[in-house]
Amino acid sequence: MSDRKFLYIPRRQVIRGLLATTAFGATSRFWTGCSSSPPETQASSGGTTASPVSGKPIVIGFIYNAPKDDYGWNQAQAKGAAAIANLPGVKIIEQESVPETKEVQEVMRNMIDQDGATVVVPTSFGYFDPHVLAVAKDYPEVQFFHSGHALEGRFAK
Image (cartoon, rainbow, N blue to C red):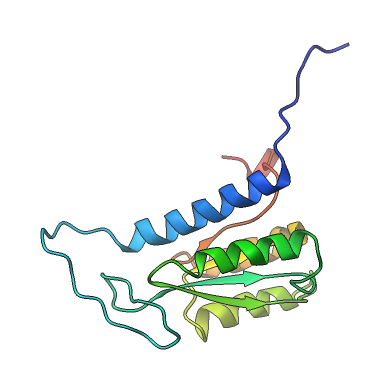
C-alpha cells in the first residue's frame, strides 16, 4: 500500500484561481510601462474603461459547452467571467452551447478576428486537445487559458 496523500482542491477554489490568473495575466501583459505620469484613458463603447497603453479594452472571450445557467461548471465559469467584467479596461464576450467539435475552433477564431479577443478561455476540457492546441498555433499573440486539471505527459512543461 502506498502512503501517498493526494491533494484535494475544491472546484470553486480552482475556478477562482484560474479567473484571478486570467485577470492578472491580461492586465499585467498590456498595462506595463515606465512613465512616471499616468497615461490618459479613453472610454469605449459598452461602459468599459480603456487600457492605458493601447487605448482600447482587453477583450476576453469565454466559450461554454452548455448554457451558462446550467447550475454547474458553466454557471460557475460565467459567474467568474461576470466578476472580471467589472475590472476597468476589460470587455467580456461569451458564447454558450458550443459543441466540443471543430465548431469551437471557428468560435475561437471569430472571437479573435471579429471581436478582437486577446485572451480566450474555452471552459470545457473537451475543447483542449485538439481544438485549443490547433488555434493557439495560429495565434501566438493571444493568451489561451484552459479550465481543467493539471496536465501530464506531452502537454506538461
